[in-house]
Length: 162
Image 1 (cartoon, rainbow, N blue to C red):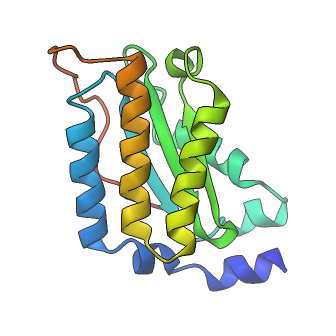
Image 2 (cartoon, rainbow, N blue to C red; image 1 turned 180 degrees about the horizontal axis):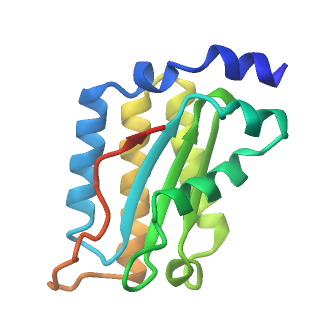
């Protein structure tokens, strides 16, 4: 049954994340990154590529692939964070680079995912995404505060629709 859900979810990323929502997320990420030394990348995928779906890949595995593909790991201090949303599976995954993973427990990311999922389940994709970015910001400010210094902004702030 999973394959049917993925087949029917192909265009859902553009439907749930129109340009106005992408703009709002981009602005939230840009504002966030003035407060800490992390780099947030937000990626949304309607469904898994057919080959990955047939091989039974999970949303977590796909998130790790997207983390590598979008080069979220490629920051000077290993402080990239990927928020990956797979609409067909109603899945949200957060993948943090090793500099962040060394300081932030997985259950903190789980809380952020649960917060976003609550909004998404109610059909509020923009508010869910913004709540997620805000929660991530709070975590990164606690562990990697900018303290008046400038974040180099090494990765694009614009969300990616895959």
